[in-house]
Length: 126
Picture 1 (cartoon, rainbow, N blue to C red):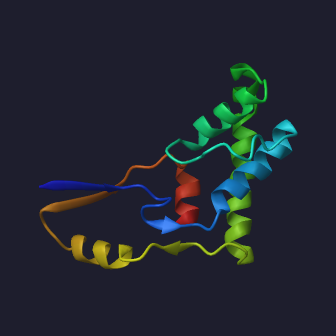
Picture 2 (picture 1 turned 30 degrees about the vertical axis):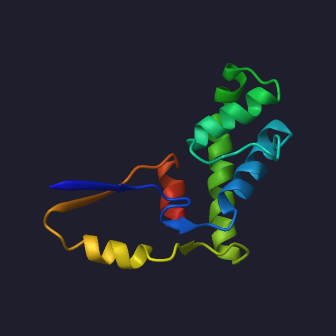
Picture 3 (picture 1 turned 45 degrees about the horizontal axis):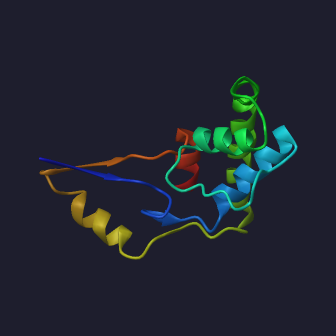
């Protein structure tokens, strides 16, 4: 038996900047600044991104964490609106559908997701 795990962003799909745009919107809404535009989001959890970006803006962990729940709500709304609007092209990367179709029916393979996305955000992107 083999366990095959996939990340979402940059592995299964390209979301055309949707996650970053939604996060920057939420950061600006809650903290008054979207943070440094050069900050790299890849390889981090959604909450780690918030903490890293806002620490660089001078916010304490306590201050950041006290606003995290509301920020995630705004982030998720940004994802939903971005998908609905058609402004962002969320699409599977080349070969992903074929790979998943080939692996899914196999008895010796278990597929799973290993992602830093909050669950609702992951479902929205997928």
